[in-house]
Image 1 (tube, rainbow, N blue to C red):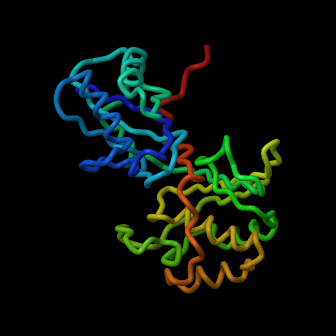
Image 2 (cartoon, rainbow, N blue to C red; image 1 turned 180 degrees about the vertical axis):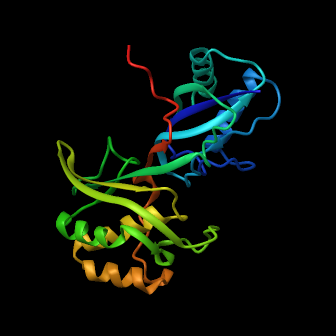
Length: 259
């Protein structure tokens, strides 16, 4: 068998999420169906993270095993051809060794969240951002975000259906920036950790938005974290502003030697 790493971009709006489900469209299902056109039979690909319904990706990573050895460019082109017309694209494809595992070899996952602040309804950005009407206090959100960085019991920011063995995780970074654009003010959240609990990033952003809007203070964020109680969490943000942006490995499988 020959193993290949795939870097994948997708718009998550039409799908129940990454994971294949019977009778429902999924990103995994789209790519596995494309693989079956290249090699007959069932295929199972493994991803670095299982994004939820409506969540997008710019840098999802998955690996697949094929009996035939493929020239990477030809495999890349063939998969993109058979993924049409779905909003799923293989943006890179490289051969890897058998010990590479998209999920277990990952050292860090980076998520990106976009909030758009403006009163008129979003049109071109609809479905790609979480729109709020009022401005947000960037400095207050940054102060509240600092409370979350480090190793904590994140029970408050964990979905009740989360299957992780422990709520204790280490959050490496949670940076927030304000970007002025022609279509409004955007607030970008850059969230990094080795792994995340179910709904953890969306729970963070929903609570931080409350801080930015003035409903919460940074102290309220600390109290929510210390409560270790899901009921203490703020509203969970919608999925369509969230993107799996990048997955880090000890050796980047997609790195190219400069020429």
